[in-house]
Image 1 (cartoon, rainbow, N blue to C red):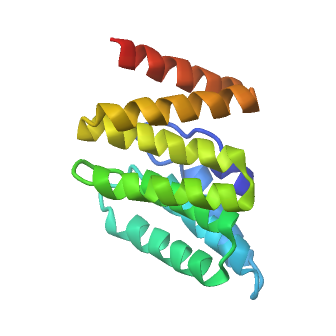
Image 2: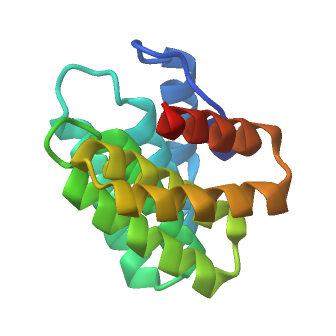
Length: 169
């Protein structure tokens, strides 16, 4: 179920197979598995992004982040914050997403997880564009591109180059 949350989902619609699998995993999860519970809750919140009512996914995300903050495990919290930005993304909250991006980047450094830092940098790029902050955009793009080059993952390399082209235009 967690592996499914890491893949791109259909745009514009909720995938019932994905949400069903995540819900089933949450139900089957034994007590005391709080790290997995936080990850599943945040994945479910992200998977429900296209539902008309944002309240249920906001509640799922809030529960996930509360668990992750209590656990104090940087990688888990960064994962939940990344999903929080995904599940609550809406016009008018770019400054909040930018602050969350910075937190993700700091947590990724603490956890020594450059792939989590890539996600934080992507949110930093998105927020900078929305806020019209060119200086921050240039810094985030450079940091993202350096991480993408280090990780050598095609989707990160593609994202870096496509955003660099956007900036050039």
